[in-house]
Length: 320
Ligand SMILES: Nc1ncnc2c1ncn2[C@@H]1O[C@H](COP(=O)(O)OP(=O)(O)OP(=O)(O)O)[C@@H](O)[C@H]1O
Ligand SMILES: [Mg+2]
Figure 1 (cartoon, rainbow, N blue to C red):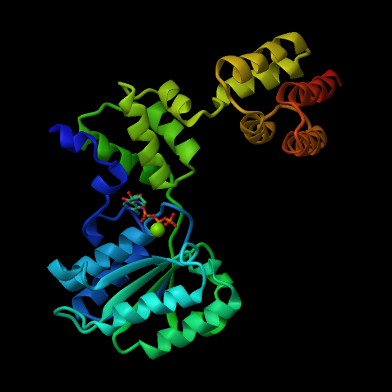
Figure 2 (cartoon, helix red, strand yellow):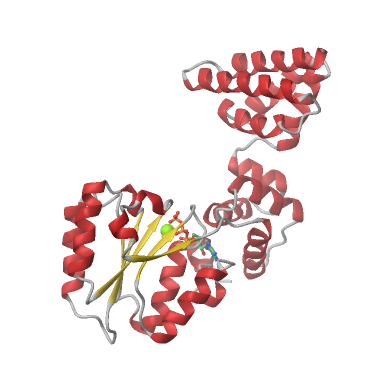
């Protein structure tokens, strides 16, 4: 591998170039492939969470429709960056006014389209109509329900599903192979847990961990600065069994030695409470206390005092 390659960002380096390479999203990919073959598409809405392949699928579609000219016929604009519909209209107009290159139409990909106000969406709708002969729109968003219905009814809506563990494993293994890296199963578990199925986040984590040498579970939690689930679980179990001082020591270790934030620990506590061996009644109480803890942390309360007070509640629940 050359030095140059090493500096490349993996989210770009390993972004699929064909629809075939897109991980999962089969319901979307199959339809897009068919349209690419026919050489025409309707306006589209791509709805789904972060890092699940919306932009990627749009670029792959453009590549398959336009071949080597895809860059000339594809424009990506971020609705939330573009500050107002006037900017969008201006850009769309400029782009639409030049003829498509060796194609019938161009594609305008509008990211975060659900961040537009309803008024801006009305203007967008008119712009879509005005240029529909020469442009197809792909509107990317988290929730299609945030788009006004006149826009929804003009588009085919595709929902991108969240990536599951197998999807993350498949993608991480592909990158690992490309980079000649070894990654263990528990590293992949950690990546999945932290990224919550966001492949951009997962890829960035893997690249950051790999930069420190070998990829280990610890390394991944370290670059993500996230509490390890087992540390949090230990801490809460110590408190439950009445070993309050030991639980406190664990907390100090996470806050001081591992440099984690209180919020970070609270997020993990939230996950662990549901796995505790205490009656549901107690879980409900603990969740309520945890909510208060989070609130106080956000209002400037100190990490150690607030979480210790929560651990005291856990210890009380364990006593009964
Ligand atoms: N289904 C997928 N198949 C292959 N790679 C994917 C998939 N989803 C995401 N990725 C990878 O994750 C990174 C981000 O993907 P992409 O830009 O498509 O996300 P997105 O859905 O548009 O997210 P956002 O809503 O944040 O813009 C890219 O490197 C891409 O290769
Ligand atoms: Mg995107």
